[in-house]
Length: 167
Ligand SMILES: CC(C)(COP(=O)(O)OP(=O)(O)OC[C@H]1O[C@@H](n2cnc3c(N)ncnc32)[C@H](O)[C@@H]1OP(=O)(O)O)[C@@H](O)C(=O)NCCC(=O)NCCS
Figure 1 (cartoon, rainbow, N blue to C red):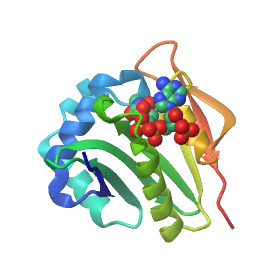
Figure 2 (figure 1 turned 45 degrees about the horizontal axis):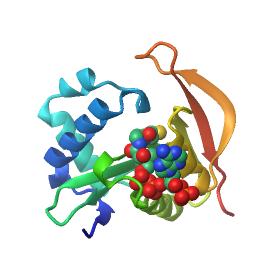
Figure 3 (figure 1 turned 30 degrees about the vertical axis):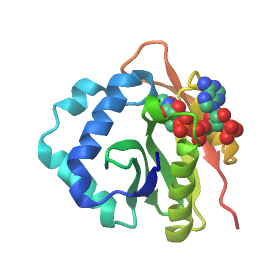
Figure 4 (figure 1 turned 120 degrees about the horizontal axis):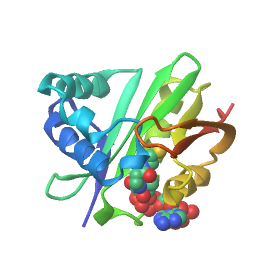
């Protein structure tokens, strides 16, 4: 099945909501927010997120979509000044292991390089999620040594990783 990777558009908000809630339900310890929190969001929150993400130079979400226009992956980034931060990395379990995470990450890094070429790119990852750590390391991210607890689940932490800008 052919999968397209593209920047999300404003009208994608219902499918982005479906995918994000599925991500939170499936991989609870991968994210700082919970399913309970985001399921309570009004439609307007999702509409605003998608609209901002589609047209901004400060935030963008990239999505992976199958032939039937069903989203199977997403990855977002915020850019502020000389820094960028990734968020929401997720691929549907049925589509994992085929390079989609890498394609999404490459697309987002290319976008960051265009809007903020000098930006260092940060992210936070639960070190127990081996595939995610491997994905980031494969693109040059390295742990900074900073770690912080994930507030919603006792005993689980997140490690900071950074990719230095290519000058
Ligand atoms: C992390 C995730 C997005 C990767 O998606 P994917 O489409 O399977 O990614 P890819 O196929 O591009 O594989 C990425 C790398 O992980 C490796 N990998 C895959 N499964 C792995 C596993 N169980 N253990 C270790 N490495 C693994 C792959 O070999 C690949 O590395 P390589 O390029 O050196 O071969 C996906 O597993 C996921 O959604 N996980 C749950 C959510 C999550 O952890 N999000 C991160 C939040 S910070």
